[in-house]
Every structure is written in structure tokens, then in C-alpha cells.
Image (cartoon, rainbow, N blue to C red; front, side, top):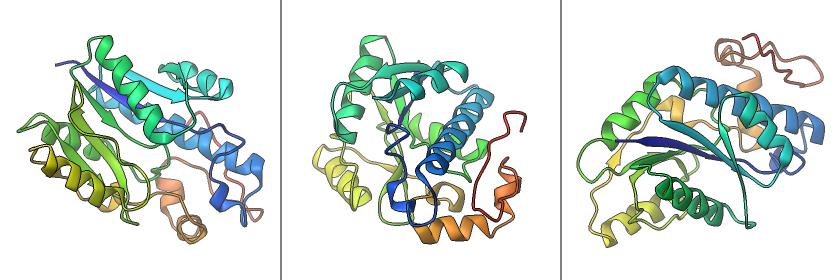
Length: 218
């Protein structure tokens, strides 16, 4: 079955606005670029996906996606769930049998996470959900055409679970420390910046100015 990765990305100038008390707009844009490149690199290394699709309204994000071997899809709307519906519809029209939706802000994401999510997605109803640390959803695998409405936003894990049961689907839950952690709130950033994971995940050491430069050689 043809499986695609679908990653939505905000315009770089809007990305990670909740980290604005700690990082400048430029730093937040650099952070988003680094995380996106890392996510796409892991996806390529996994050899689990027929195609990598990045949906965004930002031409700079399209360029990053293309340079990383992914296909950019210009976003038509202004909402996350609308973007995912657009991306899922496009993937289905192009022959994809299933998709794995991942955000691009998972600095601890591993190849093992990707393999486990896809393995769960190959069983049962093809629905696998990975919870986030704040009650959100950090991964969603489903078969196409999608029989589940996208419910990303506050408490989206519970909303996705309820929607799955309402649709008569049995979701497989993949819960891991590495998938749960995202860089969303200032305290997430502070925990990340103080941890050795900033190095082991492929990013250089953080500097006193709290910048996170991206080394394409890592």
C-alpha cells in the first residue's frame, strides 16, 4: 500500500509564536526550519513512505521541503484542519492508500517511532494515534479516503478518540516519550535547551543567546 507522510507547517514568520518570550521571530523561524528538515530526513531514512508532502502557505517552506526531497503543497485555507483535509484529499487523488500526519516540532522523534506507527497503521482499521504531552495529537495514521474528521486543536487526542468510536473505528494507540514531546510552550523549550537531547537529536549546542543554529551536516 502506498503510504505518504503529511506534515503541515505554518509560515515561518508565524511559527512558534508561543515561544516569543524566549526567542526572536528569526530564531523561531530557524527552529522551525531545523525541525522540519530533521523530520523529513528521518522519514526518508525510514523508507516507509512513498512520498513526503509538506503543506504550507509559505513559499520559503516550499523551498525547504523541495531541498529536503519532499513535495510542497500550497495551502488553500487558513486553518490546520482545513490544510490536513486538503492534503489528505490530494494524496488520495494521487493514489495514496494511507497517510501518517506528523507535525514538524518533534525534536525527539525517532526512526523507531515511525516504524511503530506505521506497523500499527498496517493492522485493523488502519488508524493509529499518538498522544502529545498536553492532550493533543502528535501523530495520526489513517487509511484513505479518510473516514475520520480531523480534530486537531485543544484536547485533540480525546476528540480524535471520540470521533473514531463514532465512526465505528478501533484506534491503535502509540504512546512514547519521544513522540509525546514537542516544542510548543516556553517550559518545553527550557527543558529542551537544558537537556543533552539538544545534541543527541542532531542539533548543535544551544548558545547563551538561546539561538538554535541548524547544521545541515548533522
